[in-house]
Image (tube, rainbow, N blue to C red; front, side):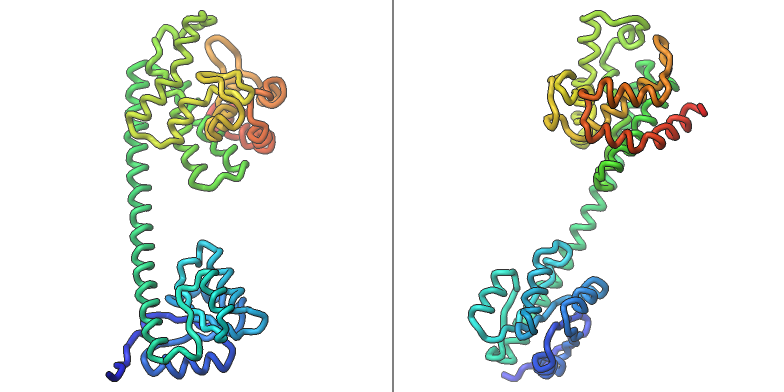
Length: 350
C-alpha cells in the first residue's frame, strides 16, 4: 500500500548529522512534510535545544570523535533534556547501536532501515513527544495548583493562629514584632546558607509559627515576670509539642511542624523536648533556633533589658556557640549587618 505524505510541520525535528546523513534524512523525510533543522556540532545542537525546544532529535552515529554519542550522553544525564525523544542513526555496527540504547536513545535506526520504517518510527517518537509535553504541562498545572492551595492553607493557618494568640493575650505588639523579625532573620540565614528559593520562602512563611504552641500554656506562666519554677518550666517546654499538634491538625507543611517542635533543640543535645543533637535536628529548626535566640537577646522584656547587637552576636556565636549549628552561626556572622538593619526597621532604633 502506498504511503500517504503527512503534514507534520507543527513538529520541530532537530538533526545532528554530517553532510551525507543529513542529505539522506532530508530526502526521505522532507517530501512527507517533516521539517528538519540541521546542526553540525555538539555546541550548536545544545544551543538550539536550549532556545528552540525541538520535539524530536535525530543524531547521526557517523559524526567525528563520537560526537553523536557524546550529545546523547549529555542529554540523557541532564534532567532538563532527558525526556527529549532521540532517534539515533547508527553507523550500522552492533556495538554502537547497543551503546546508544544503553545511554537512553528511544530508537535506533541505520542506513539498512527501510525509509518507510524510519518514517513510521519517527511518527511514534513524535507521539511520545506529544504525550510527554502534555504530561509536563499537566504536571506544571498541578504544581501551580498545589502551590496555590498551600498558600491558601497557610493563610488560613496563620489567621487561625492569630485569633488564638489574641484570645490568649499573646498577640501584643511585642510578640508581633518578634514574629516578624524571626521570619526575616531566618530567611536571611537560609539564603546565606544557599538553600533553594522554595525552601527559603517556606522558612520565611513558617518561622512566625515557631511559638504557636504557647496558646496551650497557662497565661500566668507565659506572663510571669520572675524565674519559672521547675514545674512551670516543664509546662512551658510543652509549647513545642502543642505547636506541632496544632499544625498537624491544620495539615500544615512538614517545615512548619518541624520548626514548631524542634526550635528549642540544641546542637549539643542540651535542648528540648527530645534532647536531639546535630543533624538529628531538622535544618529549618536549627536556623530558626539561632534567629529566635538572637532576637530574644536584642529585645527588651519586662524582666530584662535588650543587649546591643554585637553583644548578642558574641553570646550566640561564641559563649553559647556549642548549642548552635556552626554553619548557621557562620551565616549569622556573614549577615550580621543585615540582621542589624532588620532589627532597626522593626524597632525604630538607630
